[in-house]
Image (cartoon, protein in one colour):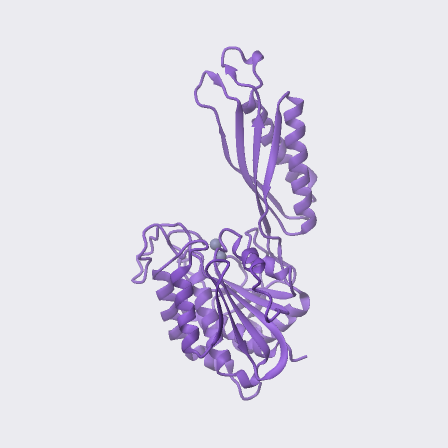
Length: 397
Ligand SMILES: [Zn+2]
Ligand SMILES: [Zn+2]
């Protein structure tokens, strides 16, 4: 790759990346309804001379192929495109033009950075082995966009052999803007939701002995569930079990017939994830039955843990080092218990998902999904550069 300087080319592209990101930021779309965003992507790709474009993948996803002049394998390069139902409060000149919707997770930047990588790669088809398949994905925030695209055949024709993707923002610590963060183990957690329904027997509040009180059962279930993480899962295995809603009843003198709780669980390994699920089911059913009622739990399975293939991580270190300098490629301090549906792609082929820190520092950084979330646009080029450099070099050995 002596005669191609991606670091320099990506740097020169930053103003363009900012322009694209601001346009997308001003026009956020939710879930699978990324109609305008997909159209914007297709238009930009067309300008770059990309002709092999499939639209309408899982409703509004886009898959585009850039073929290199040299023989080789196919790299799937993924960016998510969806925003969130958040009312923006940044006051930025390019703030959301749609009330109640905001790019509060940085997916606008992901889309812009992948377009930038496409721009660089179309200029270097003569150096590109095999092909890249650009995957612009809707509905990451629901955790359902990636599996929907897979079900719609995005990994076929041509078949994808490996993956790369990134998340920008301030999720992880240990790396600063301008650097690239990686993890040798899991980077993000499995994230499942669940609904517990407790069924008792309603009646008069003055005659509890003639009822089966679902609130009393629900409280015992809630309390006992807390012992899964504290008393059953290994203290060396990160796990989260949160009950976020607890609903029952209609009046102070009525024992209601049922009670519903909703929660989420997070784990960094498949084993811990299964253990959590099994024990939730056991406690829910056991406690309810011990108290004369019944209860069931329904799981809504989200993404598995996001775990990188070691050989792909090694290739990422090399590519990122060429762009930001090896001393600026750092392992993140610890994984996050947030979920990421990129994990569904990484189940299908080896790949690497990396962290692109776009922090401001100095107290200016708000959490992801916050109405004031923003990101440092000066470093967009490092994400674009790392992706493009990876695509040009991952088959070198
Ligand atoms: Zn998010
Ligand atoms: Zn996100």
